[in-house]
Length: 378
Ligand SMILES: Cc1ncc(C[n+]2csc(CCOP(=O)(O)OP(=O)(O)O)c2C)c(N)n1
Ligand SMILES: [Mg+2]
Image (cartoon, rainbow, N blue to C red; front, side, top):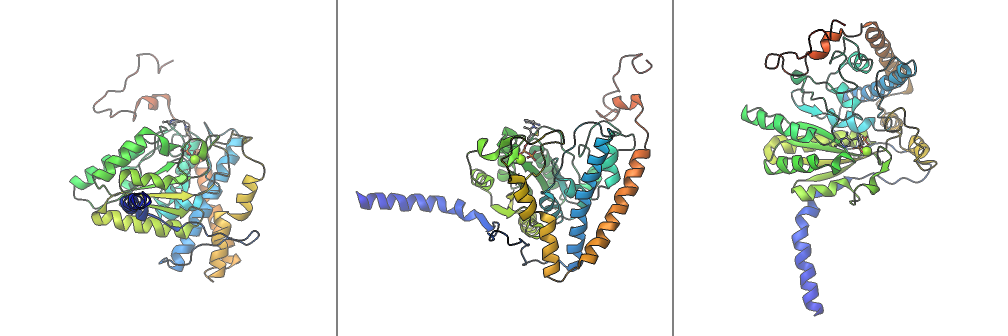
């Protein structure tokens, strides 16, 4: 009987092995003793100049968001303000691993990825203030706009839906014989939607070059992740699709870059989709109006003091003798200058003309602008 049981266990283990082997936790966060400062992984192909560029993107993301909050408090922002405070390394590091012709579709926590993709702060600022010069001419907010020519597919609000949309982009590219990859971001909450499962399954079975970064930032609105999914790690879901999965320390910008780079190589070589889970933490509420009263005491402060992605990268750059404090100050001053200039530009933009509301929503060469006669004149 015992012999039979042992045999069965062995058989089950053999059946499970391929999936388990696919889940690579090499980049799981290194445990450090309390009080010891974290740094970043040192195995990297990045040059010193590239590291400084990454640093610049991290600072740009943080300072643009601070400016948006400032404008929000002056009531100049229309709609909600969504921060990526504490998560900047995930967006910046992953997007940095792409080629310019690759596609991304971010979520609200990925402002840094937008900057890496060539979006300018002025566009984001004008968009937040619903100005006429903003990319959608005042029709939507934050990162909800797109530029096909820059490989930037702005998200719609519906969580999960951008995965199937990115599949469509990648299928189209395959038909046009373009060797691009698509990077889609999803939150831990979004990874529980039906669209996510259908999209991942389709990408896997079609071996599409899709990379999905699942951001485990501990909350979806006010719901802690362990109250909306039974898996401990989101990457375990990769097994359901039969694709490789990786866990990365989402607050280590170098690790985020390296793991995405490997996923990009895998996808571009025709081996199909990859799921990467980035372990990180949302230090602000869902949006600026959220007072975070549901967060256990001391949790935010712990992440701020012990696991801030910019602090960690600064420590790494100093330890590796890539930069000095003066260099950080010089880069930060340059970023501040750009934010000031772009903020002035965005504020000087007029508000949109009312007629604009009926254009650019549907393809007006197919669907004529629909409005009741007389409405716009009043
Ligand atoms: C299909 C769908 N359900 C619900 C919502 C409402 N909603 C917007 S953001 C959000 C929380 C998202 O959490 P998560 O996916 O973890 O992303 P995070 O905000 O943490 O980055 C919810 C429930 C939505 N936009 N779409
Ligand atoms: Mg979340």
